[in-house]
Amino acid sequence: MSGTKLSGKEVAQHSSRESCWIIVHGNVYDVTEFLDDHPGGSKIILKYAGKDATAEYDPIHPPDAITTNLPKEKHLGPVEPDTVEKVEVKITDEDKARLERMENKPSLTEVLNLHDFEYVAKQVMPEKAWAYYSSAADDEITIRENHAAFHRIWFRPRILRDVTEVDYSTKILGHASSMPIYITATALGKLGHPDGELNLTRAAAKHGVIQMIPTLASCSFDEIVDNAQPGQVQFLQLYVNKDRAVTKRIVQHAESRGIKGLFITVDAPQLGRREKDMRQKFEAEDPSEVTKAGSDGVDRTQGAARAISSFIDPGLSWKDVAWFKSITKMPLILKGVQCWEDVLMAYDHGLAGCVLSNHGGRQLDFARSGIEILAESVTHLKEKRGLTFPNEKFQLFVDGGVRRATDVLKAVALGATAVGIGRPFLYAFSSYGVDGVNHALTILKAEFEMNLRLLGAPTIKDVVPEMVDASNLSSHIVAVPQDTLYENNYEVMKPATMRIK
Ligand code: 173
Image (cartoon, rainbow, N blue to C red):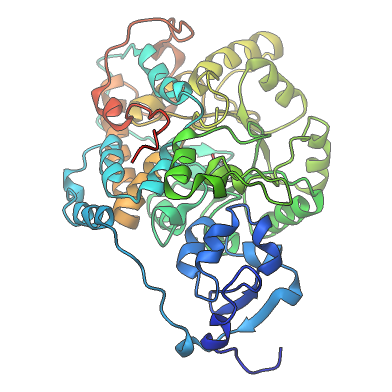
């Protein structure tokens, strides 16, 4: 293009399936030939044909999605901003009611625990965003089990130890952390809040905790790193692309930007069915449109996450470990390990650790909880490899279902270095922005301080296996007391809707 900018009027003339231009972040793109290949379907693009699609685009796309997926010649150049007509946003009655609930939500001082954030978020978040964040695989059995498993572990506190001063700080992969937790990777932060993942970066800096940056963040990787404070430690979660050149570029760029650990996701060769997310799609659009597959064969019937995850390589295998070691010096950790046999293999392959996780219950339903796998892994690593935990050279992490410092301390007692927390922070920023995340971290600190005292453990090192009774952990049919705060937030799953008007 020459130096002149396109006018909004000219763009507006390309508003059909035959010629479809859209504006994103002040630039015009010709997406006519891309319509049927769009993972989210053509209908949503056509809604913005000839118009500014930025507001719709932002929450559900990594910022460079359009520039990397469209050939250069389809980038038509900048638009004269003053000539673009504002897209009218239709406010439905439901939106109005939700905004009113947002306006009248409890003040942060009334939010006493991580469950409260979930309760507020469910009521103030756009329905689609809530469905995406809260959904889990199939019958949502594993997501419940992740939390319930902690109820099968009970404490054996010690008394008459001087707990005037308690210190809950620790080290994760050799880096200081104010608590034995980290903010784990969760995709699409802008669905919940316009600042997306930056809410987490800022709160992590303030509270001295480590953020794991997701591959599929709404903010760009560099933006998230640029917003960190000098010396702030960040990890990267990695989805491995079928095109290894792309993966190599991501990994080496991350290392050059100072990322301190690479967490390779190994539990998602294909994304699980999250039916709450899928039903949202059906309710929001005409089902006949949604069920059409594009020319790329990408199935668009399966909700937002599945549509944008088709690049993930199901061919990833143990053989790739040597390749990863050849392209980076960052510690390599497998995220999503689900039995002790694979933990031993990870150790034997010379990896730096494992996250015992089932992806927040979003992948294989009836996968066991991370905390249960932790216990069996520690036993077998001790018996078969002579390791003791926590172990500096091979670190074990757990995520899934964590809502209290007591959950974290149970994992620490069983040998975990630290525990990942995901959804609660999403709910915190979706409802209250960065202040919410800061408050969530403040709550956790207060819980750690009190619980270390009540356990008789002045430091994290004093939280030892003898402080828990986990004898029932792998019994899946034992009575547990009802956890009312948690249960409140997980509604009964909905069956298919009858389309009778
Ligand atoms: O759990 C997820 O939703 C997830 O990991 C994901 C994967 C690909 C695209 C979007 C989200």
